Length: 452
Image 1 (tube, rainbow, N blue to C red):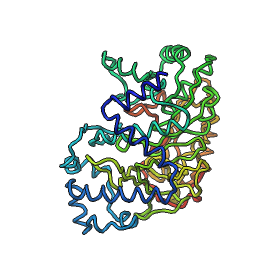
Image 2 (tube, rainbow, N blue to C red):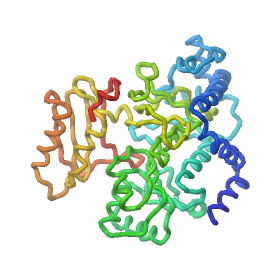
Image 3 (cartoon, rainbow, N blue to C red):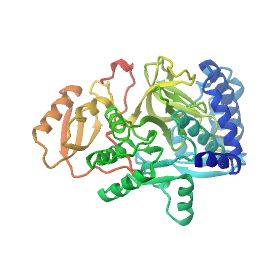
Image 4 (cartoon, rainbow, N blue to C red):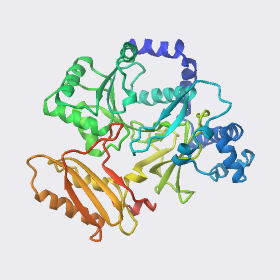
């Protein structure tokens, strides 16, 4: 009853509600269009966006003129794919010139979480937020989650947390949100959160996989029962197969991976048939050496936000790597399907011969070693690898030799591997744990040549 009333008020009486309602109606039907119909609708939006940016955004106008490009030249999707890329450095160095001079609706300055150490400033407009709200509601609806349903957060991004002034407490109460800060997961705070959830019974979790793993293990070890949300929504980090199994075991819930970023919002969402669908308001390309790659091949993620006009992101390289699936999803939705997001270019390891080591290979080395509480692998160059381990007090030193041998098996004997036992591995400023950090730019190859 509450969720029905919440949805009615949100879409009828609240600011932007009519836009959300309109977008929701479009999304309910557009998900079932054929891939060809979806791409045609997206292409019409692309042409409009490029024309708008050319007329109203100094950065794009100057860039396209330098490249001798005019919007009228964009007659096919291949023409669009010849436009220059937008990079993080472009955004950081040209903030004022990327702002539309004609956009009149409400905007706000925002920043990325800075998990790589370099936050990026950009402008977000209210219309994009309304689109994103409708997309989120539609996607969660695949699992039976409704607007206004109780949501538990296991999260670390400070700007997502209410400051707990009266106004913030009221908003959290109305939205029915409860928070556990991943930066401060003490035994007592996890116990308090668990005791509350047993009574409160959330319908969904939105969580960092690493943080939720800690909380799920706490619940398991302390024999908590009765916390059974309909949906576990994992974000911001790569969720592993063992984490999925743990969440399903502890919470008896379905797990949906959400691929998103601060500057683009939700990009792709996993359906109940495990297809990671690219949302219709995002056009996502995968490229290698500037050219589109075929499904099944690794490429750099290039995304165009089709609804962002105040500060357009057109052919934006977000520094992620991904693979498109070769087959359609069995759910019948026509939206493009990603086989996998491999992680950021700085999260992929490279062998001395230049080939890529997939993140799952590193995960396999550590997944059953219960005496390893945390790990992080850092690659400064192709010849060296540093491994940081937080270990239980009872760990056997022969474990270090085993890890060294397994890693050497993946990388070969020509790489120097050093393993350090440390007391703690710092989280990023947004509360995430980075398993892999690399200063080596990968050379993209066919997915079959990646070590997994």
